[in-house]
Length: 207
Image (tube, rainbow, N blue to C red; front, side, top):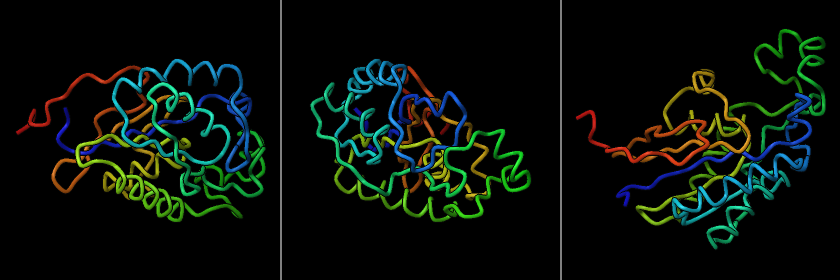
């Protein structure tokens, strides 16, 4: 049993726009059949970890993903708009190739001209996770169901990585997860882009 809180960040299952490499942002795209199958498989696996609180973005692809876990472990899913994906403005719905052709410099930097600033994404994600942690037991597990870009910013923030260096964390695949655990006043990355149950890790392994 863990003696410190953990936060598990779980990305939603696959959508048709994921397959087409379209920028989804806050467009409310549903899971495709593969996405439902991914969430149905992962739900019982994550339920075995004993989530205390499950908080999800209110967009349909995340809400439906979270529902599989909620049913598997009997925990009611809560919703927080602060966990939504980065708003993409005029980029939403366009493919990666279309973005690179129309905004080559901006796309290379992921600088969306009329979209949400990364710092704003980090602020609202960090605040949403903090709200979830306030409802989580001291040694409990909070599951955050959200989106790839937004979660990478949140992970970076919690690990003390500057927003502009968030790319040092690899991307999260559909329906994969990352786990942070608190140690003292800091968070440690225990698992990243996982698709199977994590092996127990002794926190004093390097002391």
